[in-house]
Length: 170
Image (cartoon, rainbow, N blue to C red; front, side, top):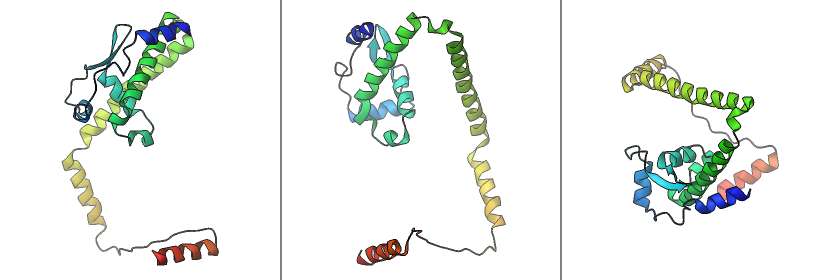
């Protein structure tokens, strides 16, 4: 534990990093920015903006609603902690453990498989193909009766009456 504490003192903290403007953060998240931009250094090793973006994309959906500039420092701090822990894990030769190695190989396969499937699916999903499928589906719907329905389901009559009163009162 002491090694990690000393290591984090050696890491460039987000507070020592140059202040990021909203424009710089917006530019960082665009895919046109080279993914080799360094946002911090941990024990001399760079932490790249591409890693920051991956971490941001892996956040739960409710956190992805928060603008990047609002959680930038926390994400950089989390990446620094991650790098420190990973360095310590490699020092302890965690990859010699068969279970860890099996999981690492599985994770690599999963990432490669996901990228491969995504690439193949995206190649098939052209604007032209989507428009043709949409036209075919909507053509099959010609002559079908369109119905609009709105319902609010509640558990009790009292709850329904309270909602009706609330709606009527505005």
